[in-house]
Image (cartoon, rainbow, N blue to C red; front, top):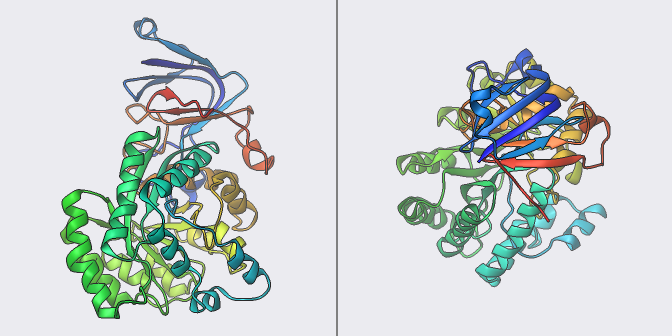
Length: 412
């Protein structure tokens, strides 16, 4: 298919200039082009400019008139938990009445509640729920999604979750990247040693054998997994070809940043509680800081110090962290708005945070996350001539068209 997008008022390229990500002052660079057309063929971007060369005209099979529209790279939600069953609306009400996240967890709620629901729900039902959430995410302009396991907490159910992600990746018109998050919490019917051993010697080898995940993740927090345990889990995952990412510094700073840097993690995610030493450890490490403002909004906890990290030349990405307990929203545009108003990032920093930097947090910025020749033709068009309207006119979805691998996606 030869796709021509004609006469876009603005094309926000988020070009990399050869870098894997944008950090510091470069996180404000958008590579903005005006009155520009884009040609894609074979799923790749082949040309950008004002007038398509005659040599390519005969290859055009589909034309989109983008006059009065702005074009961005497809948005990337680089941290989600879209595969789960059950509802925690009652726990949400309890928390609103004053119960803390930790108190609810100790009372049998939290992650344990969702684990029970996953265990008791058929694979087909969980898959259908996840499919609906992916469609919802796509409706906000997302073309690539990272999805975690972590609500199985035993070999059978962790594999079930990862199988669902892989099946949906082959069935849905988006790219899904699977992350193994067996080290999300400790199940009650295991000792600490027993469960870590199952992760190390049963889950990881099986997941690698079946090629079910790209990444390995863990929750570094008091009462969950310690930095020492995480290093051990990550080292085993890396031995089997899994790439580390880490949940850390959500409620406490206990050494997760240092553990992630030591293991060469692609990203550290959450970062609501950051000491200056944590920020210093991230600076110049090349690790992407993935901030999740919807969690802070939902739980009423501190927001990640995005401004301080950008000033330290740390590349910042934004994701939804869509999950049943602390961020029940697939709306990445809402997370972007929070990035501006609550994290004090500027519009340009936020757009790079959900495109090229989000791609870098998944190790895929060399072929997606920006509109450049040779890259995957993942693009979203908004019904406005000015990209700033996407954040200025908040609470309204102005998405007009989504292109994935050079094809227009029809959501209805």
